[in-house]
Length: 428
Image (tube, rainbow, N blue to C red; front, side, top):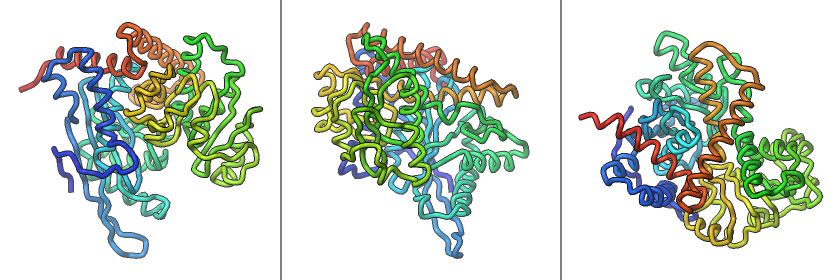
């Protein structure tokens, strides 16, 4: 059953950096610039709570299989912890710890009253039936029933989870507490208290920060060449909205590879093809290239919106973009940061660029709490204002300390959480 752990899980990372160590490298740079006192440093680098849960379910064929689930609460200093739940077969506790910490900094950067959390179940949904996925979801929720809560810890969709899974979490929690509690999760179906604009929010935030970056560089948005890696929810929405804003999308990709077209990708045609075939494989709207070739093609803006650690030091040396806007969590290895800085490439970091999702999740939580729901226009308008405000604050912080935007974002976030911690004090 539920178990609180205080150790760091040893996990091999043969092809990528340890995600928690990668996050800590950026944290350490920012903490040093801030002159963070040792006690506060030790407090903020560690998750406040970590849970491992055993999830036994009866499979459709009658056999019993046991899955492992995680929930990491990195911080609840700023408010209830907030973060998605992912279902993947190779997830590790270190990965969840890093993602939870990123959520803390992300919420602080966009100035919403949440701390950071993340959850995961080690399973492969592609090999499970819908009934089996529902059983895993409900048992995972039941095991963490004392952890979740609208005033304590609020889950959301993440990799391989969706609004249906959020509905199952909400229902399971509600059944245990004997009342319907919509605000216990975000990313729900609209009929259950979801928010308009939530699905597109991360991609819309990528668009807003991209335009803010271009304005700061005095680069006209019209005909700006954009390459987007990843064609899931974040990547496809980012590509579509950037094209709609006047950018020329010259490259896209998914698991089948990259597709380049210097004259411009027809994003809507690619969306229709992917919807019909579940992948871009075989699509004729661009020249097929490898993922590395896509990432190193000449463009003005590169949006990595796929997985972690896509921009390695080797890839970074070949990147020809003027701006990188990180739509994914941790797409750039910490060891590649210096290379990109030396090349003069502006990197809009993940904890800023992809925070549109948690921002509209906050809007959803607020709407559920007051029982009054906003129009799509109001959601998008408020999101745009918050993303642009956050970008400007990060830009000014980076300028003040003469550091890249990534370190500026960490400085701003850590400083905010540290000051809040000091004001609240340490309970003993």
